[in-house]
Image 1: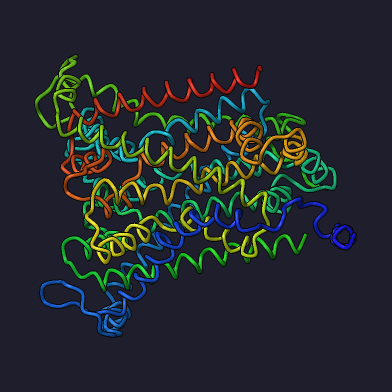
Image 2: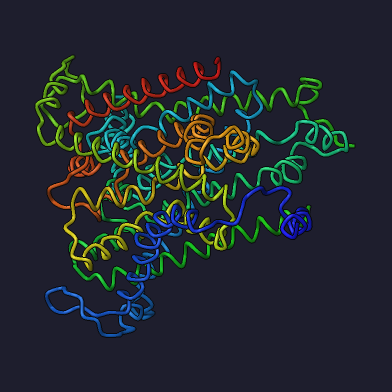
Length: 303
Length: 275
């Protein structure tokens, strides 16, 4: 009877959750997954942190001796080459994200306002390129933008330009490549929250005298903010580290943090320095993540 | 009162309609932006030229023949398919069981485990790549098939887990209890009652894991050895050089394969919805 009494007193807390306390069996079953995560996610990150404070010998081998050297090299304000690269990465990723929102938001909103069959078809149309390899999508832009590519060929044939423009390996090409790779990642989450917006709320805003812009900024944006912030995280963070696109479209002339890290691990063989750059990047990511979460929490508080 | 704009006066009470047309036009433009490059790729995969230019010289299947005869490309494709298949099976098992356990039991560290599961999904790929690379080197593991598969499982199974978890939340807890009351052992109840209910989530999670693994390059780049080139790595190497019409042919095959795949899974979904 004792146990029955405690169950009833516990009920209010556990009424929504029928989950039980695990016995040994339950722990044994979950152990492999937890172990896997500890081994292949947590341990590597700790080792990365340790590496970033290590040195290397002349052959590029790791020497386990503590040093601040790697971080000092990044934050060298007299020759801020790495800070500049870091800034460029954030800038390009930021521009890409802004374009993704500007281009993707109206699309997501339009799709969300359609009837179900149209909606599903349009959504499918947006999804199909996303399911195709992004490398192939990037290669597509190479064939269009390169010196002997389609766009130059067309412009020359139309006698608009006398000689091929140099479009590849420019900031423009990098942003186009990133934009094309990540646009669906922005459209989908915004669509997800736009779909939940009740039409009558928008109508109510209009009835209360709000013009389209007021209704948009005061009603629609706050309601779709969860989708926007998810999109920002899905686009901004991966875009910073995506060395494949920046390498293919920027040709190494516009290195971003991802390219530098890749280079440290492959050609320069300075793993501790690469690890330090990785740690800085991780910190950037955590800051962006916390910022977005904080904004989301604040917004939901205001409502 | 707002003054009606000129547009409003020209088209009374149709401001929203104009806005809607604008949105429709914009969506069409964006869709063209999404598909035009792929269309260009497909058209030029039939271009009969030996030059590295994009000028149209006539129709040919030559690049497709080249592709089939390209042994490095074919072996890379084979590697990718093997890795994606093993990753998918392992991710489905770990993800489904994990989601079920986290749903059924209230572990003391449930919150912590949940956070841990989310980390590989949101962590920048390059960080995962370099941290795993260092980890494997420290352990003196040879880079190759095994390390790539370990890496892929690590970032794929959370997607299955989250998909299954979403479905579990909508599941009636009485289902399992009923099965147990009717004399099923816990494992039987899981296998015969719960898993069939979760099938749609498992299938979509599996599809997600398969495509993620097939398309991944950043993590693969750092964790693979010289003997194990995957398709994305091969494409990356070729695309760096510039125009290559076998890549166009490959892209076309890939794209049509994707469409067939999407249509097929849609068909399956409709079939299961009808039941």
